[in-house]
Image 1: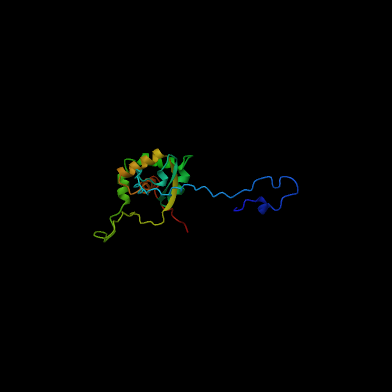
Image 2 (image 1 turned 90 degrees about the vertical axis):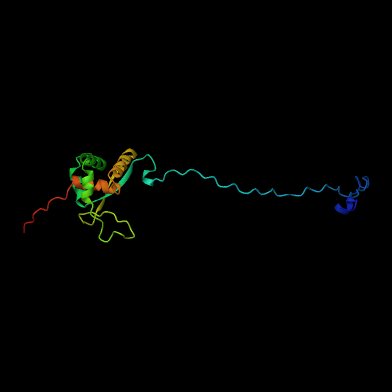
Length: 189
């Protein structure tokens, strides 16, 4: 406001009352404020180098905790049926543990008998060849059993001790020894 009269802003005064009794208001120049200090952005610090966190030994999801887990092994097609008829109330895991405990001293021989010589022409090839099953029977079927962490550890120790290629090779070899291929029944025509 540059004028000092309220009537200029609010209109003519009402009759009677305070009209003309107040001194006119004059505009006062604004008081100069000291200038605000300039806004200085903080000095950018270089980012801290990432801190390496220690990595745990790689584990499979099946072995990463303390719970019972299912293991799948691949056996010849006759084995699951023979196990079903011979279970006598045992779990699949009990069948596996009983078979391993019964054949534990024969495991090296059983594994050696199962393996064949490397495929012809494998020497000097680009890829490492794994022993193949001597029986030559295709069509292995999956069969499962549940294990605790402690029993998985024992199985892994046996795999390492007997240089099996996997738990599946170890367990299937022992199960196929315990439940051999049944002899062919003569057919009558």
